Image (tube, rainbow, N blue to C red; front, side, top):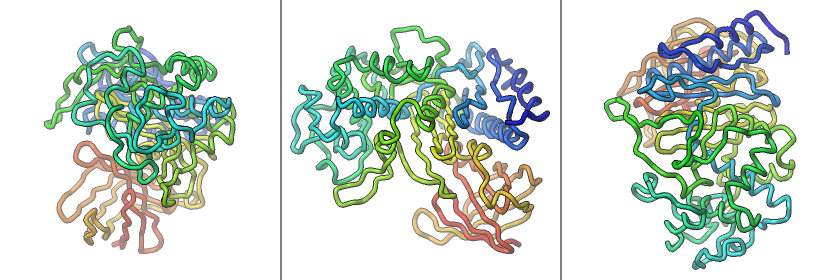
Length: 471
């Protein structure tokens, strides 16, 4: 890639930038070979991250982007430790929650390749101590949330008990009846993935965590993905926070995640998550046919697709690009990992408190690094007022007014609906499309895509269709 003056400036800014008044102890990394447009995408990503920090009140976050096998941007924002004013950096380890599932899926894929795991065999073939149920349960059903094994109940995610083995952790749910006959419906279950870690142990004849380290992490050079051990010192582990309803920040309750390594118990830097993702979109860790296995939607017994393969949510973006991804939430942590397999782009975002980690947030970060689509190539000034109609979640016809103020590079968007007004929404124009990221209820992120054609514009807020007239 060509080096530009603007890219060099962006890199230098990364070396000296301060966050909330605290100097970075580990400088941001920005690839010095980025062209001007992509370097501007880094600046836009920084704007998004700072906006999330300020408006949501998250103490610390980190982001990383990989393109065609190389990390091109990695940076921390805010604080890893508020009390000691320790900045979050690209080396800060966060809880990744359910992003642990695609990490564990790599182990399943390797065992399938080696002929050590039959995904359609009864789970007792690998975990003989797991009680027989009314219907057979297979690893494939567990991995696709089709097994009927239940998810968390009550405050089980706040467990502070230490479990010494994977099998010991199964005691929480293993005697419960299945919620339904496996394959008849999709029901998300982290406990299903805890059981899969026992499957990994039975199929490999190795303990789960050592197997992950020797077969997944070390072969692709991951040094910062580790189990969230409470009895060990883990360098660069962030502290964990919770937000109050009034917008304050408190230390998150103490938890011990030893019962759920595979379902939600790993720590990682954003950069190592990106490297993990790049080991999938580039040749290396798994064979192409194994990746297709992981990335093909499973179906219920009546043929309905679930949009979930083995450890990965699967689908396309609004341009029809193939995407695979997973989000994660845990006590004191949020995460999102997004891959564009055909375009070689990977994005990871992490936080040490409740934060809006959604597909749309990661997509907005990823967009400048993706190959342009036909609509990206022409210039349109989107400033103006739009009268829009859309359908509410209750199926009611609603109206909204969009006031777009700004320049071709970046806009501020005010959305006025029948019952609310949202200010200072970040927006960008690219070609005939206007794209915006909106913070709602101080927590959720929604994304707007509008395609402008003459005096009309159409698109969607997330999955809700929107039609607009330009005033």
